[in-house]
Image (tube, rainbow, N blue to C red):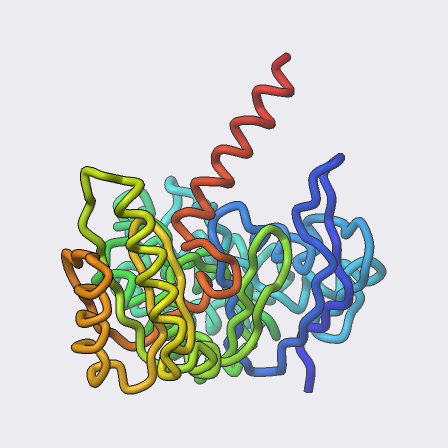
Length: 338
């Protein structure tokens, strides 16, 4: 069965297109990821699917309901965990859940049972009567996930679920997400700009860049699409830049004649080579570099990552894309101020 269906969905803010004619389907029970830099349009997609924003054009259905026509039905079918904490710090964990369940119209008997269940799922039973202001960041995130589950939603939206958490706590949150996807039989769609998070959690990933979906598949298939391992080369700077640039250009041209090279990318002064059976060809790479007078500072051999996939489809790393988005936002702010 289909849990979410998106057809040619677009959202504009004046002249700026935040989401640009996207289409995808999420199956019932799937753990689906929207991966991309901050400012790529991921949160805008979630907000439209959660009926918080009206699409400029296109259609979307969540749990079988059109997001424009049946907004109340959609809202009764979903849970949402936002990037920003939306808990009441002056209430206990249990009181936060009780308030939320009352808003969804759960009877006293049902909500008491359900509160016990979701607290157990996120392992906060022993913290239920403690004020939320005394919770750690990870505990607050777990409580928000519990709150999103309280009314047994068919679909749960998680917007950057581990943002701002330390590495150990992030891993714990991932385990909770996987567990509730299985035990609660809930469809989950999450946004993230963490490559390892998408790789660990998601059955399928849509890579989002500048409001468009540029690739969509399983993490394994996306990485396999690169055609091999990745050899990263850091070149040594030369005092004679013109001579150095020419030598590097000749080095790259020679590499491209090799039948074992499946792809080549440059970013941040690093040359990434996609190579089949990469460890066998490192000596040949150094031989070509020596012949062309190119000095290599360091070499790194690794399996492809989703970062490499993002680079392939966008021409930039996520960090570079976030920097360009920040520059664009500053420029737009300056224009508005004049």
